[in-house]
Image (tube, rainbow, N blue to C red; front, side, top):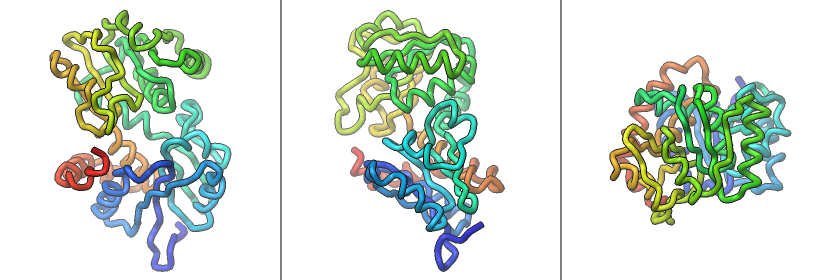
Length: 297
């Protein structure tokens, strides 16, 4: 494997814009240290007109790989040598692996999303899901739910055109016909019977913590699960309302960590077992460092 620097340190990183708020370098460098790897993980803020050069720099500088976040998960694809089947179907890449100059794109978001459900014994098979939002995050969520054999998916979104495009993608690309556009948040009142609610939008994220993607008239029911991909704050308005009505609430904190750990597996597959065993230590490490989240609150 090509060394990235003169002293043999391998480079890893995150491409996005913005990235100043990201806690990925914090926990990824902790994981790398625990694994005993001579690597450093750094966040890079990239302009949209720089993405081709940024991807090319992975070859020139000998990066082992990078994660990719908003808004470049689709934009990087034309500049890669290949992408795996999951990323191809989702249409988004969040992890790039550099094998001696050959760049392969992967998507670990869908694994990061579904595993916290499975770890809690929550099965999507045969269930009805309500997905809020129609952006790139929603694609990964829908892909994971369909693979987990969900029964029905309803999508709500403020922009009808974007939601219908997502529905069309599910039907045409994933072969899943039991998906429909259910309107905006007010229309979602008709979807209260669903088993799983997933928020893929930034509504409720810091600093707008008094916002929620569902109207106050939406009531939850026993046996339901509400999953908000936001991790800052740890309990969004949506999750607080759900918990107050006795509903299982999950935030995006574990998903963030897991997609990172599964990216490490892509970069260092021989260490898979050791990498995945770090979920607990990483969570504990971050929870004991509240000062590092001050910029995110």
